[in-house]
Image (cartoon, rainbow, N blue to C red; front, side, top):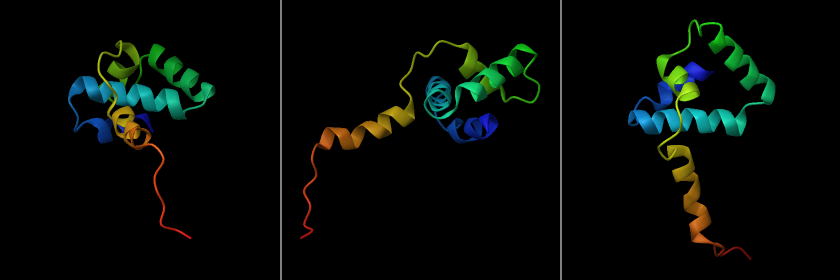
Length: 84
């Protein structure tokens, strides 16, 4: 799954890609999944995409593209409805 995220975020600038991967893992993975991933990384990280490895090791300096996209609706406030 982590490598699939790397494939998705590879289209973004590197710092945004790392931030997006790290944010997605923090937001959607269980504690056990994260611990397993970090154990795998500590054991050498065989098979992990280098972008995932960087995302797990590097401090986040850029805004995650997923956070940026998710912020939009909140800024719009209460949406009007034409229902009923």
